[in-house]
Length: 195
Picture 1 (cartoon, one colour):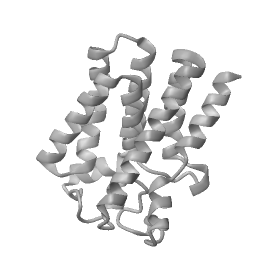
Picture 2 (cartoon, rainbow, N blue to C red):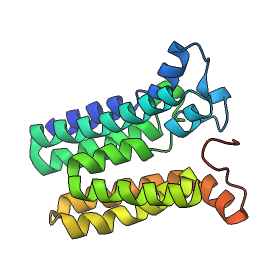
Picture 3 (cartoon, helix red, strand yellow):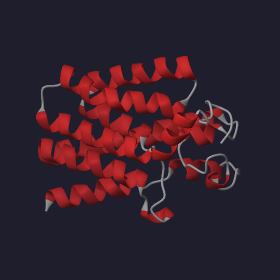
C-alpha cells in the first residue's frame, strides 16, 4: 500500500508542468505553441526569458529530488526506486496535458542528484561539457543519460539505486527518439535557436 501511494504521489508531482505554469503566469501564453512545443526549460529559453528557463529547470529538478527523498524516507530503497521512476513518468506523460509532457532531463537530473549525489554531479558535468562543446541540448542530455548508470555504478554500490538510474536514463533516451533522428540527420537545432 505504501509503495502504491508513493507511486501515485510521485506521478502527480512529476505531472506538474512548471514550464507551462511559469510561462502562462508571465503572460507568454501556452509554451506548447512556441518553438518545439515542449514544456521543458530548453523550450522556455526560446521565449528569450532566461530567468523563466532557469526557474523551470530548477523546479523540474526539485520535483524529481523531492519524490526520491520522500520515497526513501517513507519506504527505504524500494520507495526511492518507485517514487523516482514515477515522478519521471509523470513529467513525461502528465495526465493534465493529455499525457504529452516534457523530455524528463531536468526531472531525471533531480532524481539522480537525490538518489546518487556524486553520480548526479558527475553527470551534470558531462552535460555541461557536451553543451559547451556542441551547443545541442538533446545531444548533451543523451550523453549524460548514457553516462549516468556507469557513473552511479562507480560512485554508488546500491543495486536498487543503480536500477533506478538505469530505468530513468532509458526512459529519457526513449523520449528523445525524435531528437535522435534529427541528430542523425544533422538537423537538430542548437541551444537558444530554432525549434
